[in-house]
Length: 213
Image (cartoon, rainbow, N blue to C red; front, side, top):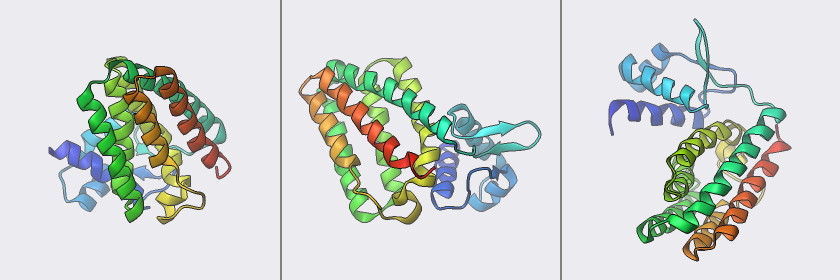
């Protein structure tokens, strides 16, 4: 892993750990000291997070975590549901056998992360699942949009999902089961089913969060 990617993952881990809250600025100098890294990879990682929609940037002040609102959450998850349902549909038509095997392995990692209450692993496997479905669509534009909208939605998931906040669920966690059903639909080469299951999965995530925002 190069320094830029390491800084990128480490910043996400800092947010996952509760080091920062919505509205907080993430200053290059402070983060460099926390991570024991030079400012260059930290600066590049923060720019990546801005480009991906996870952070906002204010001139002369730097990068900050956006303040979540119900209106923004509705728009983010509506966009995510639209784009990712197309990704799942296309994956059912275009995924290679190796890609389907990889998706099944990611679901197993999902289940392990949940059983261990491992927030870092759970986030990484969840991100990996959604990005791999998008990659299996074999459409570079869908993949790009999924990458951006997925991370933006995690402003809400990090700060309002009880699993990420407290390491436990106040409602049953359905994600691994839902992921597995999506993989099965892709494996069956059933684009309509894969699309509908992805919509249901993202709608469930949104519904479980919106009452807490």
